Length: 439
Image (cartoon, rainbow, N blue to C red; front, side, top):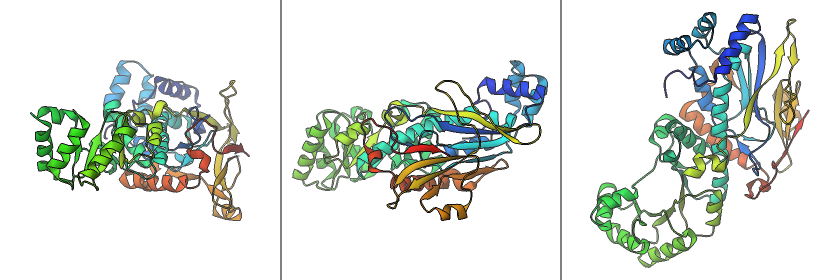
């Protein structure tokens, strides 16, 4: 997507900059941190997603004439601040967890070092991106884990806004989904796309058989035919009659799925279509997918549940100032002390402690000094460093961008999941699977 991201911003970010420019504090070097105080209720781990999108948004965070004119017309900030915004470019540094990494309460997912004015401008775009994408990825990862290796596709574009649909498709793919129905996600992020026909296509034709023949004529017998527009048993019979026993797949979008799937599998085998796959959709989430683990399902399609984070559309991340330089140039830790919303001040570094089986046992967050460099981590082979530099002097590391960055995040997520304790994959309510320790 092109265009400025500057007005994807809450007004108070600009008014803070306006006042800070006036009193001279705007240019104090500052350290902001994005983290989650807790995981969504009952979740045992989270998955970081949105980082690649965020870095691209930050690089094109500009106030062009159209944005400046709107701010001027509505008197949002003083004229002097408009001049400052006209030249705004983020020139700071950003560190954080790799996209696709698992995270836990207190994990310092993103650290931004820049002047106060440069960094605080990014609060909304940081949180809106990481909160949504990480929520989708965390829900999607749970669905993937209970799908037991069966392919799973994201098809929720019609259940969210047009921009969120693209973000959701990317986040789900990073979490292990195999494809998306969203073409823009395919074009922008290189995600495999899929899709054949809806019930409307069947209803368009005079008969179900005519609809099936038209689809097979267009796409060949390996296509997927939707068999539940009328009667499923008759639909399966017609599908095999039209496409032959080499029919690629049938899709079922309604009914008592465990019972229906078993009956369809038996019918297909009886008709000689022993290699024809069964795809199910119908408002699936991680719990219904788990309930189908013993059924002869070959693939899943998930819509509403994945794009809404399976009930948690935001991951609960916050963005806080944790340190700033004083007038002498020294770093000073700062922290919010509000009841139930306290934060931990200071620069953070993080590592995950693994046991002898390479299973994660503890999230270590080092406040101030901590392991910093390969030599120190090599000295303690049980520690895996978690933070990497994502942006230097306002320029993003290209390894995290575009389709290649998305694939890298997907691969990293796959590796990380192998480190999590088996308890992480239980769907019942529970606490984070490993604890977070500050040092």
